[in-house]
Length: 152
Image (tube, rainbow, N blue to C red; front, side):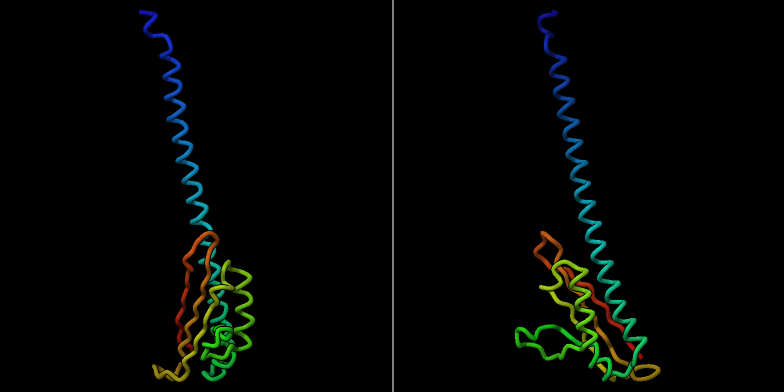
């Protein structure tokens, strides 16, 4: 009887080590997933803050539609010769901050469009669309954050 049971403790120990190893691998996978989600949340927060910063500048300055267009409008497609927008000086400063804060933003530049003179209550307003694009490291699809506001 004793001869048949020799080595059973070693087999139990190997099975326990296997189960423990699978648990550790699961925890490592969860940690990697949590780090990626935290990184994505940081980039989205930064994009939101940058877009709101630009809208805040528009609200505190001259709110005339033509002035907003001249100062803030831009899309940075000039290098391709396809741009119909002229990049405003305040847009260019803001774009530099976007490029510094978000990875891949230099390849996926932000865009700001100002449509002046849109009628609406209580008076004529400008509709501003701010689009921030970036591409996180090791990802092929760019991410986008877009804000549409009405500036009266």
